[in-house]
Length: 141
Image 1 (cartoon, rainbow, N blue to C red):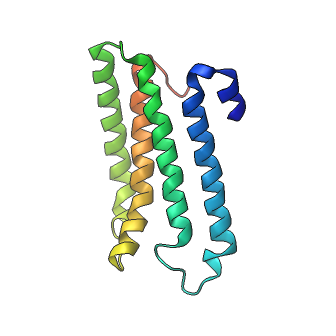
Image 2 (cartoon, rainbow, N blue to C red):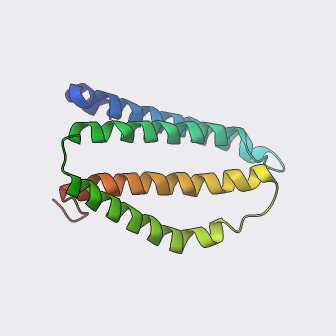
């Protein structure tokens, strides 16, 4: 990822934010592995949860650079991306969020338990709605 940032200066900022997100996520894994999982009971929110949230924010910021390259895109492309993104969100919510939103416990426990899947769903919808208008699909070479 660092090499991509170095090779393509016009896309340096998104690649650097993606790299930062990965490094911060790895730091969260280390904090969880060496500290949080050894606490009895594991606190909610744990110290690693804050670090994971920062990594997700880095990835959201990396995505926010992507559409700037395509500001001249047609209204039709924007509409197509919106439709595909909402469809993916609806399907994911139907299959995924039933068990997730049944979390119980304190306010912070429920908030942290629901924040991860909601953040991942937002990233998935942003990715799909950004790539769909340009004809990308998973089987593209």
